[in-house]
Amino acid sequence: MHKIIHYRNKCIGCGVCHEQQPVLWRMSKKDGKATLLKSTGKKDVFILSIPDALVVHSQDVARACPVRVIKIL
Amino acid sequence: MKQKPIELLAPAGSFDSLQAAINAGANAIYFGVEQLNMRTRSAGTFSIDDIKEVSSICKANNIRSYITLNTVMYEHDMQLLKSILKEIKKRGIDAVIAADFSVIHYCIELGVPLHISTQANVSNIESVIFFSKFADVIVLARELTLNQVKSICAEIKRKKIKGPSGEPVKIEIFIHGALCMAVSGKCYLSLHTQNASANRGACVQNCRRSYTVKDTESGEELAIENEYIMSPKDLCCIDILDQVIASGVDVLKIEGRTKGADYVQVVTQCYKEAIQAVHDKNFSQQKVTAWKTEMSKVYNRGFWEGYYLGRTLGEWTDKPGSIATEKKIYVGKGTKYYPKIAVGEFIIEAGSLKKGDTLMITGPKCGMIKEKINKLVVNGVENAEAFKGDLITLPVATKVTASDKLYKIVETADA
Image (tube, rainbow over all chains, first blue to last red; front, side):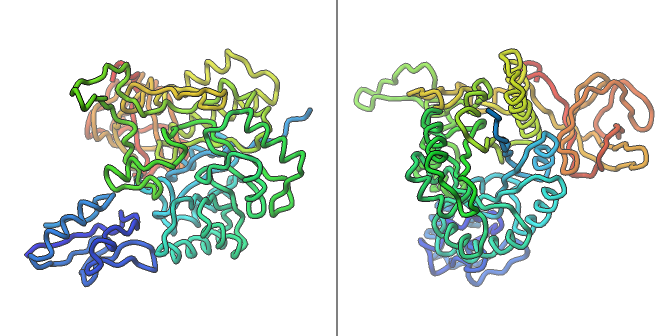
């Protein structure tokens, strides 16, 4: 099982993750940053376990993030 | 003719820089919060919760504070934008610097004073007339010549163009700091290479790197004099400050929210003195040389006067980063303060210090202090040298905390 880690405090709210993978990402109406849906997190680090089928796509999304705050483990 | 008052506007990317700007005599500062400013990528950006403190520090020191909200704005930014605008209205920030029409719209709706950002690339009087309906200050594009600036200022006077406050519209221009290879901000290099938009404050500065130019047909590389083919030298108007002021501008802006408190204090101080010298009619080449020497010690990519004198082509730096003649080497941080005797204690965390070294302290209370140490007190005893792990004490007028950083200053050639 792979994990997505989102370092949310450094997100600049460009919206590319939401555009590319709306099934996992939403733009918060409250603070304009990306939110990793159904993730669990403390402070500014959010984690979500993903099925293998989503790994390649998620890696593309991580590469597209301009400030590299999305990591796939 | 009596010279009108000039406002010197300094960058505040941190509380250290804010205090440095105050120390140097800035009349106003500008800062950004969260992700809606053009320096989002840089560390130490302020949060919405810092607005209160920034405002109270500025008010206590009788200087104006402006907030930059000048990125491209998306639909999902609107709530944050409104929250920031409500907070700045509550805290009495003097104006918002904006380019996007959503920001302009909400500022009008909330009655928040507005300045038009250089990101709007205002380059002619008709644009000034258009924006004067909403803004009292307009920052012109950095690519104008001084003659064009002068003509805009003269037209404002002639046509009696007034802002919403009823006062004549003020013109602001950049006088010092980094220049963009593109028309300010209208650059997509960073977006194309790393999907990091400069217009969301995420520029990765591709232009500052060296490049080879290759003929793809033959595979031959072209011989070029300078591999930094897209990296302009920094703007520096101190040579021509008398002409700049004579053009009729009201506000002189220094770029550099990502730069250290030392840069902010030194550059602001030099321009403060230069403005005074122009006012006192004793602005001289000798003084200019001294100011330039001083400013060369802090972060710079080499200086030129930008496009103001009508240059058709930029001047390019030949180094990847700063060519400052002095370098600051991190030595340690503050640990304790003895207010009764105004002495600060610092722990040496890296390298060493010796009597006679020049030290620099940067911090939120002191801004920047730089001085040669003639007496070194190490672990409570006078000593000639201090090493890693030692505690040194120095006289410091303002409170020292762990946020205060201690540096050793060395000439670049010795670094």
